Amino acid sequence: MAGATGYLGKYAVRAFKRRGYWVRALTRSAEGLAEPGPFSAPAIGAGEVDEVFVGEATRPESLEGLVDDSIDVVFSSIGISRQRDGLTFEQVDHQANKNLIDQCAGRAIQRFTYVSMLGAEQIADLAITRAHEAVVRDLENAGLPHTIVRPSGYFSDMGAVLDMARRGRVLLVGEGNNRFNPIHGHDLAEVCVDASEGEAAVVEAGGPETLSQRDLAAIAFDVVGKPVKLTVLPAWLCNGLVKGIGLLSEQFGDLAEFIVRSGEVDGVGPVRGRITVREYFEALEAGRADVPLDATSAG
Ligand SMILES: NC(=O)c1ccc[n+]([C@@H]2O[C@H](COP(=O)([O-])OP(=O)(O)OC[C@H]3O[C@@H](n4cnc5c(N)ncnc54)[C@H](OP(=O)(O)O)[C@@H]3O)[C@@H](O)[C@H]2O)c1
Image (cartoon, rainbow, N blue to C red):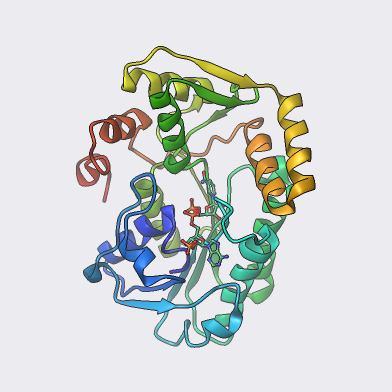
């Protein structure tokens, strides 16, 4: 499992383990795996992973031995969601995943499950989309049985809206009328295990409710008990800011362009999640680490 220290990856490690898999988790930091991540991503305890493999997916020499004949399924949710390393989408989202694919050469892998994004065709010109779709082509060229999971937005991004509502004002990138159905990491992790056990080439997935950014902000304000206050950053201003950021840093410019452009398009996938944003926000507001997962979701 690659991406195991990330938001989705932590839930996915738990989900594969719960379904009876022997799990080897690739990580740059064993400590990172054992700590809770932002927005309720769980800490992975010693009993929840069978082997921790410390390596850096961008450095192929550090991956030697990662995929051996004991491995049936390779799962990857490696990608940049918050820029920390000064690397590009091409270097991480594409090349790091290509390095994993190369590790599978000559092995009897039953399935490579790769997490890309929903609605890629609407933002095909962006650096992040080009990188994700290059991985899809690499999987096809490698002749590996594979499934591409294409999710709508994650609850990790929704948590940022709750944080803004707590501070009294939510910033909308663009008019905030685009529609999407965000999905909790726990629900998406179950989808990823199902996808790994199925034959489908592509699995699209979203959460139970279709919302606009404005709907989402209204739920967040309601949960924190504050009046709705929005600051709308119009598209022309956002696009100008993106250009400016891009001049200072290609990496941050690409990420900013993705945030702005994905706020302009719809991203509604088949309903595969059960946990609602309101349940999630209410749990966080009540000081709980997460929603009661087993009661709410299939598990
Ligand atoms: N957020 C959304 O709404 C959304 C929607 C659809 C698709 N996706 C895609 O889903 C995937 C997973 O998202 P997520 O929210 O789980 O991301 P995340 O929490 O940022 O985790 C990403 C994983 O990639 C690893 N990674 C990042 N940079 C790396 C580098 N330079 N070298 C090696 N590993 C690196 C991280 O390792 P460290 O923890 O060590 O940094 C982490 O394990 C991403 O590809 C994202 O584009 C996200």
